[in-house]
Image 1: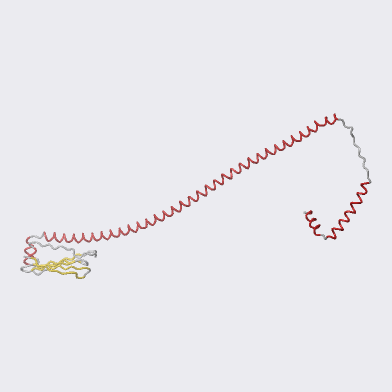
Image 2: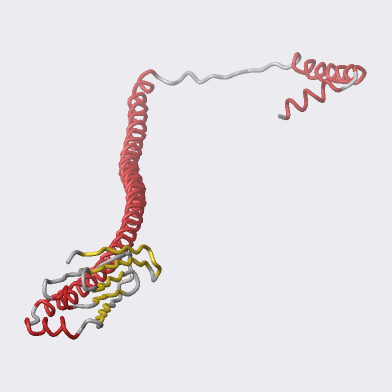
Length: 263
């Protein structure tokens, strides 16, 4: 760097400075040369060494060189062994780090797989929960429908039981009672009313049965039902029986018809 600096300074000088410096250099070099040209040098050499002495010194020098080389070789061998030991340590450390890196990668992959399984299980659980809620709602609706149908069936069975009891009662009347009814019940009307909690779409649920003994002696037979039911009345005349059928729905008249039975 100093050389470059001096070169830069040298090239930066002006031509006048260059001439002055050249003149000074020539003056300083001319004076020593004049001194040297007038000086004589005498060299003395000692040639007293014999060839035997030189030959005897050569083995010692070679042995010294050999010992020095051997010491250097042993030093390099020691350094080489130390480097091998360090390389083995570094190799073991590298293997441990590689195993740790592989274990970390396996753990990361396993974690990602577990995250995917967790997401799929959560989706399956949510789907199962939704299906369970739908199944519960469906079952609740079916139970409500079955309860409604059971109530309707129970109401119909109650109506049937009451009608069967009435029919059985009138079928077991003795012949004497039939005669008494024929003579003394010309202007009597019998009203039978059956009520229940059923208020569905039943338009007409009754049975009107007559027997040969009752049809002539019974002046009128009129069963009636509540909401959603109907009514039936019998009228007796000396010649024919008239049956009037009235159908109602929610206490409103739906239809009315009359039939005249033969004697």
